[in-house]
Image 1 (tube, rainbow, N blue to C red):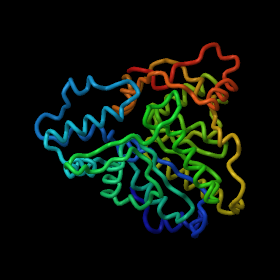
Image 2 (cartoon, one colour):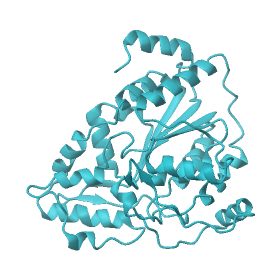
Image 3 (cartoon, rainbow, N blue to C red):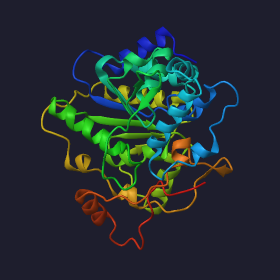
Image 4 (cartoon, rainbow, N blue to C red):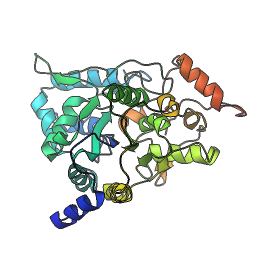
Length: 348
């Protein structure tokens, strides 16, 4: 249920930080099965007329760790079936928000400049923006960081990878740790250093950026989804592996209630003076969180579950790690008998 105007006004008064100015907190969202309650890449099979299925010959072209390339072929196939960007837009606009998400986004919007809100998604910009615009929340996000996509001159939807990287645990087109780290550096160059980070996600690819969260930060994993399972495995293997506070959620109202309490607690604490830069731990991340995960299968609600289609297909071929990642891994793996495989290297 949405908060009433009176309730929202009371929350603003309690938070006491909605005045215009430099944002104190960075709030980061995933998209598929976080903001929306479906995997949008699965949803678009509803776009073509007739049977909603891609042929086996197309599915067989998937290469391990190159899901973005696979989706480029899927969009090309849909175009050949007569599906146009306007048809895809209609599908994206119809995807329902997750439970309580509209409540959460409305609450955050009421906080003025207290939060800077961004979205990091392995979906695509066309789909994300279409869904957010239809739901009335597109204007809340300072930046949408997703794989570039746009209508092609031939009437098809084009799709490109977001970037390249050297992370051995992420798909070739996107490492969310690097995306978030680069964004923090960019904002630091602008003179903005966030007091706390909040990260809301569900998938296995949301696990890698957890290494950037410090003790004052909060991870919001969707309960029973891959990121929650991975965090639980890491904490079981090494209880001190996660520095950030972990708050699982079933409804996004759970996230709103926690953020409301954070604002209430902080209302009398003046924001720190802007200047300097992020501490070395945040700049480098916490690789220990990445290496303690064991290779057991993830199960949820009594069945194998690796989240969205893109994550069920993520079985990466080895990729070289950067020198910094190798050094971090060395620092945090002393005494560990055997390193686990990449977190994507798991089949249901």
